Length: 501
Image (cartoon, rainbow, N blue to C red; front, top):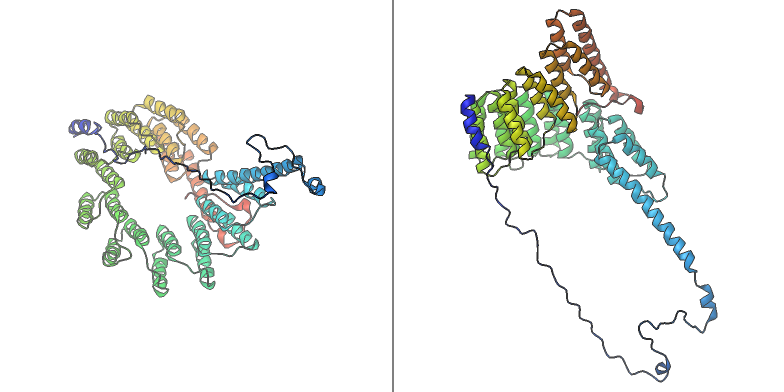
C-alpha cells in the first residue's frame, strides 16, 4: 500500500500552475490638469491706483499700518512656536500611549495592556470610549481572565459609560471561555432586566457553545425555549455549534433533528461550516462511509467544499491508512487550484507518523519546506512522534533542535511528543529532564503527559514514581476544578488563573 501511495503521491506533489488573477495590479497614472483663470477686476479708483502692487519676492518684511497699537499687540513668533511645540508633544504622547495599548492588545499581552490603560486614564486628554473597553474585555476573555474582565466592566460603569448589549456579550464570553457558566447566566439575567441591553442571537450563541462544551444539554434546551419566547431566531452559526456538540456526545439522532430544522429554515441554512462539522465528526470517529455519504449529500445540496473540507478528508483517510484516497484528494485539490496548506501537510505527516513510516514522512516534510509552507508546532509533534515510532531517536534530537532554530512555540503538545519519544527510547532520565523543563517553561502538564510517564515507570517496575505522578495529577485536576469556581465569589486580581481556551 505504501508503495502504491509513493507512485501516486510523487505525481500529486508536482506543483501545478495556479490560475492567475485577471485583475491588473498596476493602473495607468491619472493626470490632473489644473487650469488657472484670472478674471478682470473692476476699474481701480484713484485712491487704489496710488497703492504699490508688490511683485513676487518683493513683499516687505514689515507691514506699515496707520494704527501703531496693532503692531505692538502681535504675538511674538517664539511664543507661537512654543505653543505649537507643546501641542505637538501632547499629540505625540497621546499617540505613543494609544499605540502601546493597541500593540499590547494585538499581541494578547493582557497584563501589559491593563498597565498601559492605567497610564492612559491618567492623562488630561483621556476620554472613556466604549471601543477601548470592548477591545480589553475581548482580550481578557481570550486570555482566560474573567475576574479582570468583571472588574474592568465595573470600572467602565463608574466612568459613566452606559452598558450595551455588545459589552455585556463580551463579558458573557469572557466567563464562558473559562467555563464559568453560572456566572455567565447571571449576566444574562442582568441584560434581560435592562431595556437597552437585551440579549441577541450572538449572546445566546456564546452561552449555547459553553453549554455544549460542558455537555450541559439540559441548559441548552432551556436556552432554545427562551430564544423562541423572545423571538430570537438561531442562525447558522448557532446551529453548527449545536450540531458539533451533539455529534461529539454521540447523540446522532439529535444531530439529525437539528440538521433537518436547518434544511427547513430560511435563517439557518446549512453552509460549508455545517458540512465540515458533520464530516469531521464521522471522520474523527473512523466512520469513513458515513463521512463520504454526508459529503455527497452536502454537495447535492449545492454546498461547495473549501480547503478545510479537503483537509478533513485527508486527515480521516490518513488515520485509516487509506493512502490511495488520501492521495486522490490531494490531486483533486491541485486540479481545482486549492492550495496545500500547513494543515494539509500536517495531516499527511501525521498519517505516516502513526505507523512510523519515516521515509514518506521525511519526504512530505521536505516537500513542505520546498514549497515554502511554514511548519508549526503540530508539524514537529508529528515528526518527533513518527521518528520515535520508527526507532530513529537521533532524528528526534535533530527535529527538536530544528524546532528551536525555527523558534517553534513549545506548548504542552510539543513537550508531550518529546516525553513520548524519551519513553519509547527507555531513557527515563532524559524524560524527567524534559518534564522539568516543561514546568520551568510554564507549560501545564495534562493527563496525556502523566499517562505517558506513568506507563514508562510501570514498564521499568518503578511503581513508587508512578504512584507519585498519579497523586500529582489528582492534585492538579482538583486545583483546576477549584480555580474554575472562583466566579461565584469576589476575587482579587492575584486569584485569577489563566485557563486554556
